[in-house]
Image 1 (cartoon, chains in turn red, orange):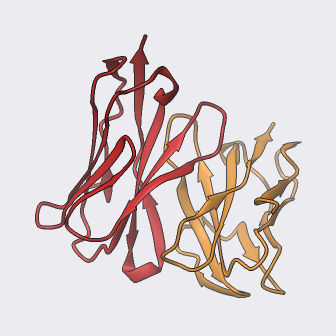
Image 2 (image 1 turned 90 degrees about the vertical axis):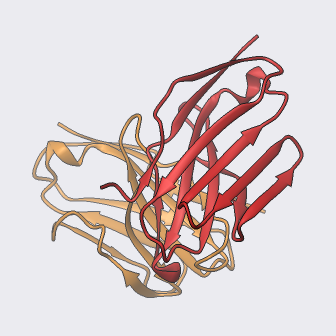
Length: 111
Length: 113
């Protein structure tokens, strides 16, 4: 079983809709969770991080964490074509020893 | 200030040659990470440092791969006797600490012929 799993997509949503990206992880000891966005041919850049169960909102982005279910999600409201990218879920395992990235979900926002 | 820089940006080498990839982290960042990223995949952890100490090298594929950060700043990832399967994008990232946001460099695209 892979440590961090994501649907590879592509996930296509119309402009203005809500995009929902999901991530599951296997290590119950994981403490912190990160969402990165990676445009084609570019480096990953951080969108949000979350440490505690519940929701965390930042502008059009909301991260949701459920440690009991080992599940973290990213919601993008009012999706824009510029949001089209690959979204990487990263989990900090082993109490800071290393980060494990998921394979990424490719999002396409259609004008 | 300047972000994470990596050099060279592109490296083409022949099978069997050694290569050295350089990472210059953001000034003051304690932690430095090396990843390998295949096309269409997420970054795969290789190794990381806190200051000059290599904390975890469990992701290095085999003993042809090594990394150092002798003065706690610039780091070098060395691949000896390169093989075609080593071809990939090698990314470096740095952060203030192990549980902080990682800032990625532009990567080095390695092609082994």
